[in-house]
Image (tube, rainbow, N blue to C red; front, side):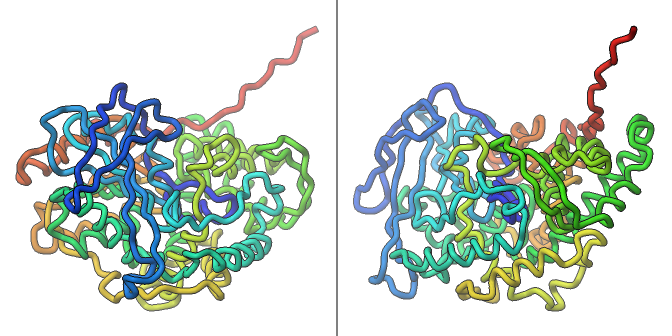
Length: 510
């Protein structure tokens, strides 16, 4: 999840896409299917062109249609061509807690070809962005020790929960994925679109699978990038998958031509770092630059190490950072851990709505901790242990839990072509999840599903190299029979980034 685990310490964003912007957009009003309602011209930060915005009013509690209402906001990037296709592309954001509209400026350029004949739609899922937001306080300026301290974050989350409960839309039971996908269906009806083409990233894949389960005939094509299945049990899989990614990073160094020469004792130095905690450290704050002194614990270090594992280019810097930390220089290691934070120069619109995040995870994942389905295949990592499970269990003790239907945890049979994407170096949603979901989706017709694994990709495959062309061909194909299989050989041989070696400043010779 977008991120899941990166949300723990500094409201980290879990978006799987890094996209750019189309040069020209034709803003044409979209007539809705009901009552002649239309979208209206609007602008958003980061996009210079006029777009189209809309709102659908939804009951906070679907069982009380006349009760409290919320506004679900959405953005439409109109197709460039006059003779456009009627089935839009819907982007489902990660997190959980990410604003789809907030990440739209970064996503658009990779979808320029799709945008030529299809509208692109971004919906702020309830609890995020402008749709009944459940935001906690911004943590990007917190001292490093507080940002990394699980106990301090638990206290902040409890304060946030109490504050959110006072909002008109503060019934935290009403933000499950199941209810949110009913909002998505209401948007489709308002736009008058016969079907969607879904692109889900990270947690957005769970949302896409739930929409497929509830509305199978409303989906034309589906892309699942970094699969987070509904039965994943987030806190448990974090430890298993994070450990596998860390072990792979250490092994990659040992098998590299240069890394063992530069860092011959890397694995031993990593083990020594863990064994030597807690200990007093001094580092500059990654945002303010001000010096900070605090006691670093094992859990805090592991949180910091996990974040760069999401991006192979940052993973390549881990060996140098680990060795430097073993020599008493912690700024590199802790800096990598905060380099993906929601603050520190990133726009407010991309900050995760942590209230929505915990409303989803506390309802859908935490209740299944310790069950037979959770323990299968989720052995705790040697280093990471059960810290994630313990943290979420505590955070969810007082958090209201929404009702989750039992069918939610089943992966539906694919009613139409599905393209599943996995990064081989992903520490959150690695190929083991994609493999299982692909088998379930293709249970009755394996030809409808293709699972592409890009071995050296991290969390999010759609932004890697030529994969945007693969997505375009998959969605643009006129007939289902031509949609799959797709040739992704252009991305499969992308090498792992070479290990980072700090520049050595030569000493002046006499």
